[in-house]
Length: 310
Length: 319
Image (cartoon, rainbow over all chains, first blue to last red; front, side, top):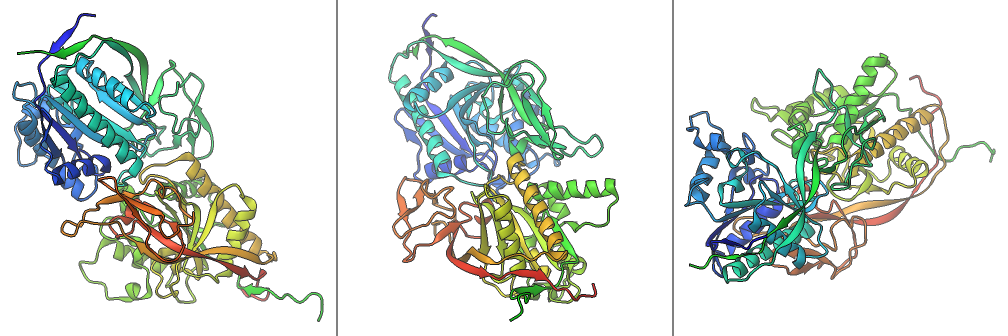
């Protein structure tokens, strides 16, 4: 593959508390703010707490999920008196970190999340972005024993990207689990902090002129999601994730494997194409009608890159 | 002495029994177990079963611990008898409703036994939590469960409070305990945790049936963990935000002896803070989500052995 050149990174944001009860990111950003971190090497760094009101009450959100508010359509709709707290905040964040799609937007936004699922450390990207794939590879090499994976949400277009990191020229989320919402685990905090530090290191090395050789990386590409079995009248759950699926994120799920166990003890089996499950039993997804997501695994080759010299 | 004199304890039969779930609306094993039991009762039309209570329906509906105040702190004698203002929080009003149905606490009309179902984010396995270390009913039920499900790690926790001072829902009955199962994130149902709670509850109810039928339960020793104190997170003096997390070497080590000098916290800048108490104690509720706001990082207990006498139901009862 041909060598690709990218402009240097000058402005990057690290956002935490996009969901107010996902505590690793809240405390990583607070720590950065406490130490007045605003410059790291060649990078101007903006640590930001995305949803302060929900952090205050340790809830995912006040009115609506902030991390679904950043589509072009929602960002361009004028606010009214009845606009949700989060939509207002999304407009503010778009002004601060964006505007999305413009030249003034942050070069990079890294948005920090936790999950109750046993997913280890995941880089979640909306598109195949050579910068991000190189960054992931670098972090994987620096943290060889950590369970690090890449998820491509496979969203149809940049304008439909709904997450806060989509505001930047290059955006991604770091998702670490398992951690209960509202709980801070030291091991999870340490893993996330180390990944953030290596990410910023990589950006500085890139800016300094390092050539990063081409390579390949395994990527889990979102295919579909599966809901819980529910009572048709009440919509209440009638089954939970089967013990054989629980905590087995990224282990191949095959046709006939157990996926749910009803409250009366019966097993429900998976029917469909062999795929890789993730976000298995994520607390916040019960209301979104997602018991787990399924992905295809692909190996993506990426080209050598270096900074475009002026 | 005649050979057939019973030297153990005799207690009245447990005629009225209640099972409560969803006292905290986001502790989902209990919420779903109560709903499942209620559904089965509607289908079977069977009256001969325990009273079932979904304690905090509004909180369960919104999957929150509580709406205004923690329901499971509303049941002390003083709290239940204080005048009720117009602006009383939802949970205070609800506690009076529950006390009317299952109590009144302290009176002869209160139910004989309450089992209140809870989950914790702490790695505590199955725990019975009681305000008494001499409630032979609860202790015998615990012994029975240990015998029937020996593979499940279980402990008996004692909070040393008088019956009047006890503030939890299970104290409304003459006997009772909270049954706590973890670890499970709040708002999540884990199948293995649900199954543990369901199995344990079935055994509790089975023991009660055996007891009421006249079974003699042989006494023996039971290890009891009695609360000594709570330890809070190190906090920033001005903002009150936590400045450290439970140390990785303490995380998930509920009921593993904590010695003076052992690591307990790790600050955000990576330093270790050690336990500076003088006595080795047993930690529990390590990193329970709901306790951050109560100023509890973990609790500490002393282990003691209680000799539980043999037990059977009173034979000469009208009810």
